[in-house]
Length: 397
Image 1 (tube, rainbow, N blue to C red):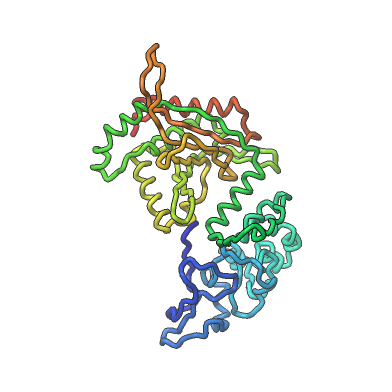
Image 2: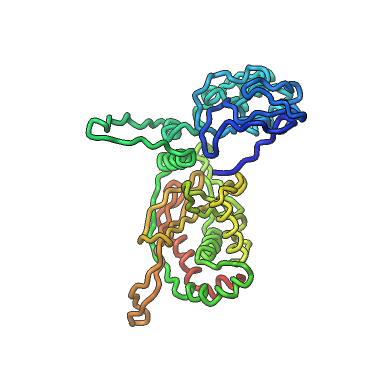
């Protein structure tokens, strides 16, 4: 989902690239071959000659990205001196801090990946003994079944569909597998409940229309989504149990004092949720500018890991595509998500008269372990109250 820079562990120049853009590679598979400063080319699979300074002093030495689709390589690929080491940047950082050479550590993680406990175990501490049972609990990008296995569920075997007619098998992209894993994990762990309601956004739409040209002069495209972000943030202040995460093991609800909202962005590769930080503290104009910049970065495939992390509540708006409503799945480990469909003019009774008003369908899905139906209804009303009174509630914009 994110673009990650991998520092080169060698000086010189890249002589050959062995993979294509978008290609899925296995752990340990060569990505590039390096030549020295004089132009001499190093053999692609050969062990690097600069072994001594490489592991302990350089930045994360990862010729292969830690997030790959293949996890079934040999259990101990890290023992070849100078060869590629399968470990995440955080594990490499820990190894440098503890003075551990990863080339001498046996990896117990998926595909032989070296874990933090493996590194600690190499120093003589007993943490390595717990590495084997804990490693399978971390969702690995090898298919949608992994997270279900982590909660004790396994999907049954599929029948042979070929017996009824011809079929085609289409490999899932790494992003689609990641989405599938997270959705399966959320659905398996969280008892979802959804509250449906509608907001009268006639006045809000009029405000957006009146202010569109003024905003455009400042390089801002003003949309309803920016106001939804602000309204949700203010409602979360009033109902903090929806801006939280549940620590079921400790029996605690983690209430977050920050309000970082994720907004689902549809791309050609799939749905990605970048995060806008401190939404409750920013005016609508600033939110609109930041939303446009972040969404474009996601569509261009230039989002960073920081762009996608740290969300406390998510909004998914399918209004541009149509529909009268949907039941969104919670973005685990959050506890709530707001779905928004297309606003439509409907006949509404106002003061004894039937008048046309633009009604916006809302669907609030939340974790029933942390909130009851009445709590969900109150949160929805706090949100609707703000959407229906934009002149006062968004005066700061």
